[in-house]
Length: 171
Image (cartoon, rainbow, N blue to C red; front, side):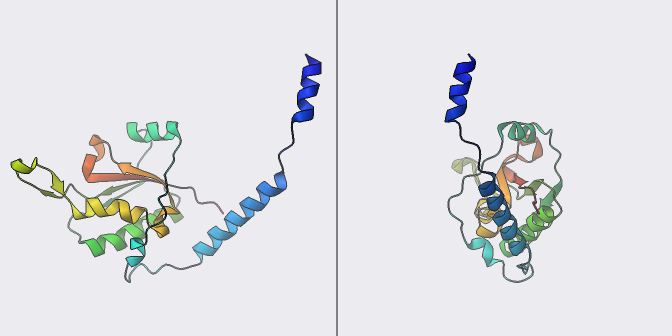
């Protein structure tokens, strides 16, 4: 058995730590550069209209399960009832950026279900904010800070709310 082990050791190459360290340094530099960029929240929030590439959001299975069962505490909530589309854009930008900088990870954004249609239409809702929010969260500015987002469970707002899980702030 030790002969097999010795044979195996000959075929294994050690991990090149230098490349890993360089990659981490580059990531930290990019993060610091972005942090110093200074986003103007009060002006036109059209920066949320710029779509990023069709990024797929991935989150660890156990973390997702805990979030959906309500075992992870919601760190901050934003209710957009009563706000128009432009006001909502700037509020979402400010909300996500502030919580990212304060290292709050799980956010709840309440958009509401939108205008109710008649029985003939199947009682469907046509909410402008509800349909726009995913586009805004996928924007180049915000997608860099978001690890995952999806509709909230029924007990936290269901189709009228979105849970957002932010990445960790690394320095």
